[in-house]
Amino acid sequence: MIREAKEEAGIDIKPETLELVHVMHRNELNGDEARVDFFFKCKSWQGEITNMEPQKCDDLSWFSLNELPVNIIQYIKTALEHINKGEFYSELYW
Image (cartoon, rainbow, N blue to C red; front, top):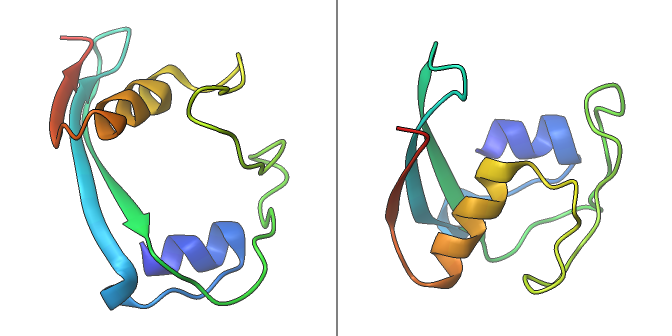
């Protein structure tokens, strides 16, 4: 998580600022590959959040959980819904 935050968002985070809030076991829509995703809440960071991979990501923006963009990736939207309900584990596309 620490490495990915630096590579993708240009911020520095410390392990003690991270909290694991959700685990999702999902299958790809075509059924070819299963994944386990871990979602963390970060309480604080240093630096300015910047899109460090514009070739992979169109935009980095903050949204209310009640006003997510229509083009959000479905499994991310589903994970956020479970997190908002306080549910630690979910499965998708099985």
